[in-house]
Image 1 (cartoon, rainbow, N blue to C red):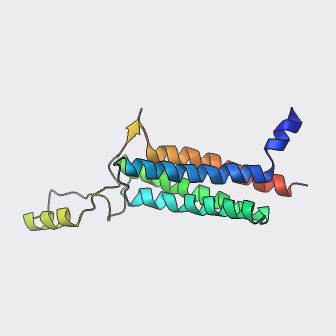
Image 2: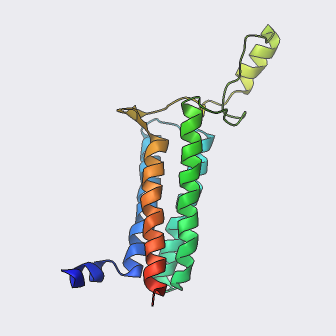
Image 3: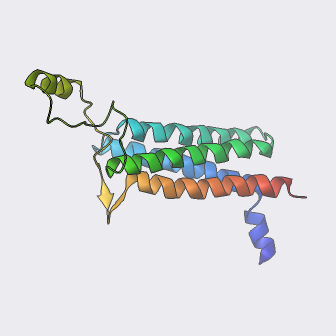
Length: 163
C-alpha cells in the first residue's frame, strides 16, 4: 500500500496536482464570471498568483525544470490565500478595503460630492459579497484551496530534496 502511495505522490505528481488545482480555480472563476458574477478588484488580484502557479507547474513538468522551483509555487499559493483572507475581511466589513472598490461613509457629503462618488464608483464593489453558500464566500473557498495547494507545493519540494 505504501508503495502505491509513494508512486502517486512523487514530487512531480504533487506539482501537477497543485498546478492543476490553481488552473481549476481559474477556470471556476472564469465560469462564474461568464455566469454573470463580475469580479471585483480583489477577485482579480487573487487570480494572478493562481496563474503564476499554474504556468510554473506546467513549465516544471513540461521542461523538467528543477523541483526547487516548487518553492515559488508555494509562495504563489500563499499569496493568493493571503489576498483571499484580506478580501474576506473586507467583504464582511471587518476591515477597510481599498478605496478604489469600497464605499465610504456618505453622511457628511454634499449632493455634488455624493454624485461624484457614485459616478467614480466601480461597478463591482470589493466590500459586497457577490456569492455565498452557507456563509462561505468565494474568497473563503480560495483561502482553503490555496492552503491545500501550498501544502502540495511544499510537499513536492520536501520530497524532492529530502535525502
